[in-house]
Image 1 (spheres, one colour):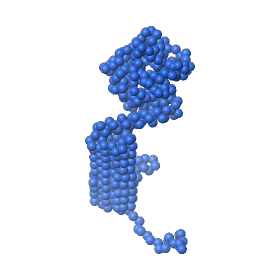
Image 2 (cartoon, one colour):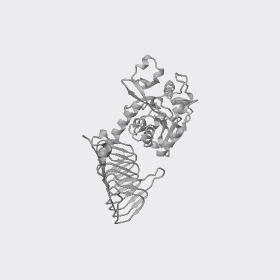
Image 3 (cartoon, one colour):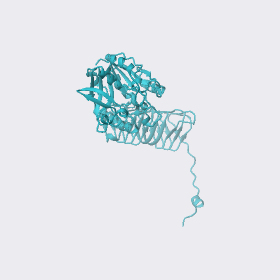
Image 4 (cartoon, helix red, strand yellow):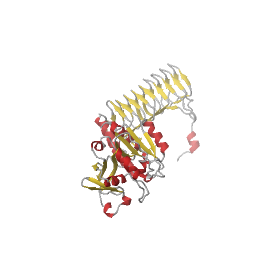
Length: 435
């Protein structure tokens, strides 16, 4: 379908009280991005006119979403005078002839799952599915292939509560239908709200065509609690892992691996069990070994781990990062850092070896400072490099040395050790002799 023929409205004004959180429901994250992000991303694949209706925590919501998208229209709902889903549609001016209404708490929606709304021709199309336990959903009454009405659970009688066909919460309307019936909505119901679902009953009385569209529960699953959030996360993670394995990434025990939505892989990559890769990380022709964490970093032609941690803004290239090594905001090219080291706010050039227990002391309690290490430097075990410091090419740092600042010139040996003292019988004087 031509993007110029479909407008999309995403309802994201609710508090989400069942989440039991001060954060707006649609800002809770799935695979590293707000729930609302995933819905907008799918919507932009099929429409050029996307409106998000906001109210609760509207400024925080606009700020976060605008970080990812700059072509979204925001409309503020008058939730005091016009509460409910019908009230949310009061000030919508859709550009296109068909209007698809989505909920902001359905992060598993894809553009492919929405094709039925695009391909079906009717004045109103509404999504349905059948549930063994329909508790919490509006019941859909269907006769002769047409939707007769939708009854919210809190307003349903006993016979209607026994219906297992439920409203999946997604609708496609002709723009004329919305323009005609939204102004006619009433809030005379148990909750005192304006229901978008009442458009169905009003349109039905006038003989409009209302076609039910059976959809699968996975894509249209709503997130109303932390349990729903966790279940949706599992589904999203399975999709992400399956996508990258289909692209050629080897994953060992993939169900134990967490990969966020913005992560990219290139070339031949291996991710071992229990790894976590987040942010906009790029892994290229590399091995991420067991139980390692990669945050917003670039790893090229390298191996990382096991049990290593790359914190944000790390750039690792042609490098070996071993177990219990932490790197933060540092660039390492052609480096070996085998174990038990912290390298932060640093650049390290090729041929350099970082020994066990080496620390770049980058923070003085107020500011952070840079450590620059050149080529072919050997940094001995248990050394501390107190930034700001520059170590030029072809330098040896003796084990146990503290480099306090300044520059260590090429070809030098840097060593700072106190003379070893051995005090005879001190142990026995301090603890006493054991019988």
